Image (cartoon, rainbow, N blue to C red):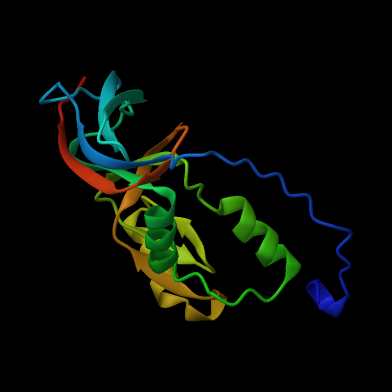
Length: 187
């Protein structure tokens, strides 16, 4: 059933597959930034060491831009799609049972891929999840209004604000999660 109870017909599904004669998997072993005190407003190379199923080391680099207004201690999280998807589902308390076509489509569009590394730069600013949508880095006055008005929908606190997101496609199924703590110097 779609929104407002209307029936939805599915015209078909197109599926493309590819096969390989050998496994194509890699594990995220290590992540680092050479600069011990990256500066706000600068771009820094994030290095990620992957180990293939054959034990070969593959070094990948992704340039990430530290926002100009960033300061203090931030977390940099690098994760495979499955782990990040599970963490986001727990954080936003997304229902596992989808009730409408809109929810199914939104869920499919947000799904994380298993051949991609996802990078999130997270600050300590508080936020909230309102009706399943994360709203990060909210001023205390807005948080107070949301906490006080429980009639406007579902509300739960969000303890960190995502201030940057990147992704790196790979040619293998990747597995693993690593995080760094960064101290950002003013620019």
